[in-house]
Image (cartoon, rainbow, N blue to C red; front, side, top):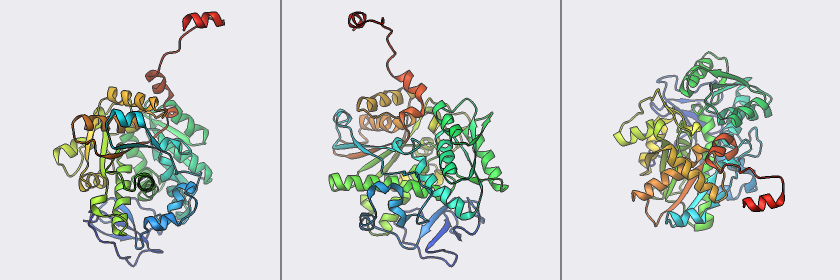
Amino acid sequence: MSLSLSADQPAAPADAEDGVWLECIECGETFAPFADVRYTCDECDGLLEVRYDDLPTFEDFAAAADPDQGVWRYADTLPLPAGVSIQEGATPLYEVPGLEADLELEALRIKHEGMNPTGSFKDRGMTVGVAVAKELGVDRLACASTGNTSAALAAYGSRGGMETLVLLPAGKVAAGKVAQASLHGARILEVDGNFDACLDIVQELAQQGEAYLLNSLNPFRLEGQKTIGLEILEGFLADYETVPDRIVLPVGNAGNTSALYKAFRELVQAGALEEDEVPKLVGVQAEGAAPMVEAIENGADEVRRWDDVETRATAIRIGNPVNAPKALPGIRETGGTAISVTDEEITDAQRDLAGEGIGVEPASAASVAGLRKLRAEGIVTEDERVACLTTGHLLKDPDAAAATGREPEPVPAETEGVLDHL
């Protein structure tokens, strides 16, 4: 099985280019990486992954350029030597002493992807995906989005001088994200349906050659997202001389779960990490949109599509995670799990993070909400070192932030009146 932690380092097939190729995770068919536009396997329609015949180690990363270079510091583990870049990556791995003490953990760190250029982790994927689009010679980019993907695609497409088209579920996307896509020049189509309906349409447009798809179904986009995991591991090695025991992350389309697992598999294949050192991956979903959790709890090999999904965590309001075939093995092979949390638990976690000075949108806080629940159930133990991934910035959804925070207090326009009020 190509997605096993124990899989051997692959040998380059005849259709590889500079040691890079695409491989189907279902049937093993291989393809040249840049000869044609493809998103899934020509033979069985299975998901594709990018493969390499020469995988780097931590020593290779340490010898690379300045860490502030971010994603492209890890060029040795990416399909191209450079991308369409806006200085993405190198995001903070925050200490949270209050939360760490409250949860009684050996160590807790927050990897805040909201500190990327457009305010979410999506930038890591777009810097690679848009570069590949240019390599393929396409001129129109497209995505379905709950908001963050549209903002990143619009920014990176604009940076690359390419037309961008985004499909959004009407009335279901936070204002801050729509504003970003609009300002960066994307053509925005509001669909009378949910995210999964938007993705169905975009996939059909891509299949007809009308646009280049840059949702996480695109295997090149996930390559950029691998670097989240590499930064977390390097940060823990620098501060604790060990990798984290567990990484907890929100799950929408399950792209990050798939990408982090791929990063760890490649490190094992390169001899940089032992199988028993790989962090457990824990996926967290909102109760109203939890098909991955259902699959894990039922021991299913695939997810059941949820047609009706609802949660205030708009970024993970997804009922049909396309990367489930990659993410389910990632959770199981690492000894992880998946858990759902209520919107109220997400709101409480958003406040907890704000109390540490870290501002995130609701979906981001799902990771901390899930960790708190797992800790209460004794699944996470006090001797563990844990990283929580927060995926988007507070200002992505200012309405949700305002609703969660304190109400303004009216006072008179005089000092004595203010003092009396206080």
